[in-house]
Length: 44
Image (cartoon, rainbow, N blue to C red; front, side, top):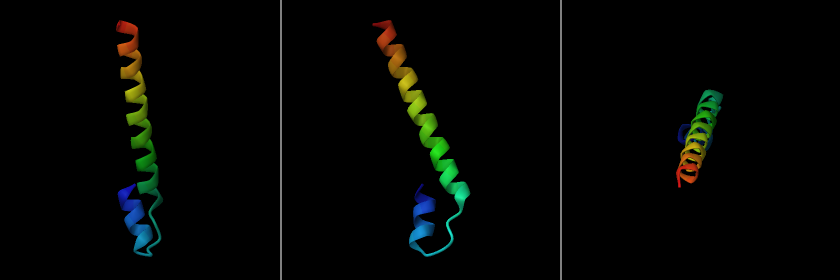
């Protein structure tokens, strides 16, 4: 995301790979967070 934003601000053609990588990374973090929350809720 940061690299994508920086490239956009500098007027370069942003590299879509950075955007996809950011989306995938965010999705993994969210899924992991939901899974750990679910495990906590189930154990209590």
